[in-house]
Image (tube, rainbow, N blue to C red; front, top):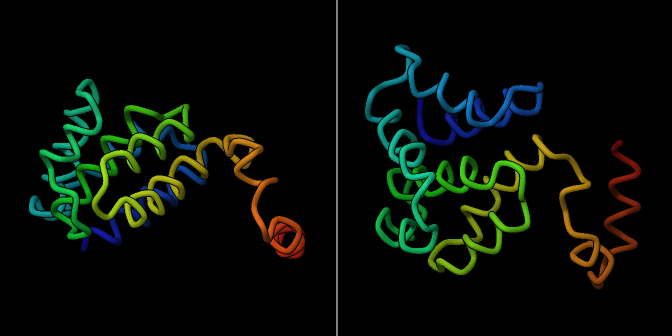
Length: 139
């Protein structure tokens, strides 16, 4: 299972009602997943009490799975109920924050729903009406 499938499995579990931290713990203890894939997320899980920006700097800011995976997991478990703060802290850490934010947004969005997105982030978009129209068409 490559890191992308780990993220997909996590997103699927959370979308179907599982708590993000519990879903992560279940995946990192799944013997069918290689230890090479389970180790980086486990590092992220263990780092949840650490300060975010320095933790991401320690893990690495790039988009490679071994570096991005623990960063994403750190953000998800530390900010499970605060999508806004997760995205802000990740952005402040720099590097490939956009890539990490896509995955964090997918997981915490599945967990918290649309209500978690700060209203100004939606209403102040130049294409807000077009985006709303598109979202209405797919729901």
